[in-house]
Length: 185
Image (cartoon, rainbow, N blue to C red):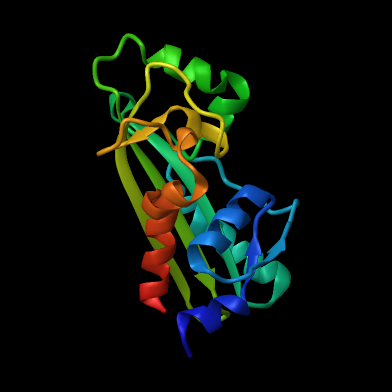
């Protein structure tokens, strides 16, 4: 069985249609999205811990092959934060607030992380993708979603949100995670 045929039969458990769109563009396969609003997400800054817990819960709920994905943004100056908690920072302070909170730190290094978990009923596979970059001094761009407006990947002078979808998807942390998953299959 090829990775492509395996992924066609997996339910992608997420409530975020942007993640589904990016995953489909990266993988070149249509994915069936399933939203499980009652799925409990533990609160930790460690993305991998969240993904492992979510993929096991999703499998128990659906009793079929499932895939979950979660991402985070790690600021070197904050010793691992916000990590997977970045979405709560977005809700409470907004991306602009995160940029402001980093103003007094000289180190603007950041790591975009993505973990993808796949559970087929027997095995759990977890793949990681990471891109090093930095936090922009101000929000830039209107493409993408979430914290794309503040993350500039190394080797580039534009944020993810200033890139077209194909350009971002060619270099992103999500791309690296899905490619790592395909290599495991």
